[in-house]
Length: 178
Image (cartoon, rainbow, N blue to C red; front, side, top):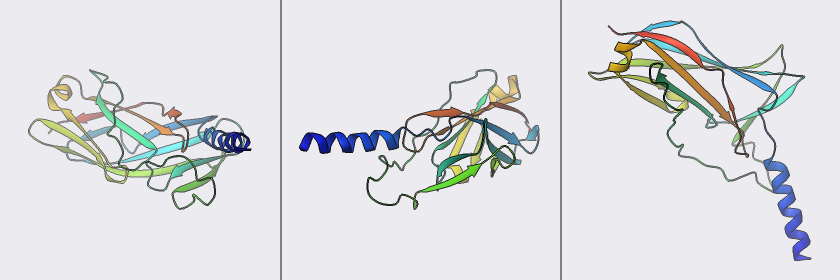
């Protein structure tokens, strides 16, 4: 009896964790301009389109499963992101998880779109890219930008309960120092 119950509970957990929200989707990053000055504001729009028919995708209410990274094109550093402070361990077996998660039904005609406001600031040695809503603050040494003004933006969306990532199409912007 105990083995049957354990197998049943594990199968429920495995089935609910295996849902890949971003399977059969395309993810894009878009900016309001192609060239920025240091000390500019920017608008970053994320877009999620299904590749087939209508689809349901899920994001944490605090958008903790979206990662964005700014890096100099000259170096093309590996994608990096600070660890997030909040972690949810799998779906509740009994109960409602809607207090943590928002669901969106998307189609090719009505994709998911979200605009994030960010800033580019300049200090003595660094250029800082911040998106407060996503708790992102990336710093790039000015020497890299003096060599090449192109900044590479990468990102991904993590599935809510699985460990799978779906990457955005990377995007490039130009940053001119004052």
